[in-house]
Image (cartoon, rainbow, N blue to C red; front, side, top):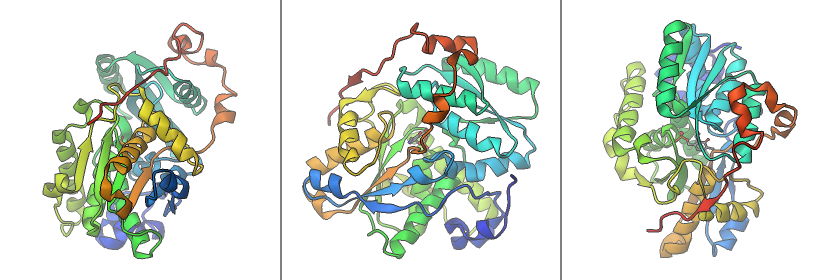
Length: 376
Ligand SMILES: Cc1ncc(COP(=O)(O)O)c(C=O)c1O
């Protein structure tokens, strides 16, 4: 498969709005627009709310969730540079790493993952088995220092490799979510969904929330974004959020000067909440586990690491905000829902590199203990 710049690219919301941006390397990976639906049961359970969901779990038939939107821009960008391997980082159970492995294969690009510790859960083990199945080279580096050492070494020795930051949240990947924000604006225009007052979304490496911010700004929507952090502040501080906004806009404005520089409005539209995090990446919260149960009533499966936390913040907001009943609330569902069980059930952990066996043979125990999130 190779990147294109044809009819499909001209029809994406971003290029419809700014036609000069058709020069951006882009390849269609998304079934778009992803559906918007009312969460009837959850709305009822929370006392007559108006809660909607953006079904980004359905972005791609091989691996859904938020990542394919970023890879629509990341993969052709890398391909243009004639790179043959992506080196990228994440927690042991990184969704980003798995998405990278699955999506880049079709472009003839290999994946090397450099993985750091996170609480061991069944989902972490499943993702590791899938990484292996889809051909990722797995490196257990334990912590960030280990990552640095191995990455620098491997990059120096292999010029055909490309380093991709955690979550594919560089100024290229973030463009995928600008397009997503404009896609939502088109759905509002078509009356598929009323214009939301609030949008709840998980924030990890920031690409999703920053892209959505820019997209909603460019569309001129009123929607306020409630970014719910799931990692430590050092990975998405205000300064980092601002930097990524500026860099992404700069990249777009290189192709089209008519794209307005909206970076100064970042914190007028976006509020960041760090109280639902649970203190450690990958650690479940009781509030997140409750959110998982609520969403099941609408046949929506959340996860405890990202989407459960974003949804739990929305539940809390509905319970504590007297005016919430009069608002349109949108929850952005960023998790993959493609069933990979036949894949991970078919892999023998002993086929993984030796240093990973400890996560399967009982040496390291499952740690899915939950904590309470910090209440405001
Ligand atoms: C399911 C899910 N939701 C949300 C996020 C956060 O997105 P971002 O890293 O762009 O902030 C991730 C990141 O890996 C994810 O896997």
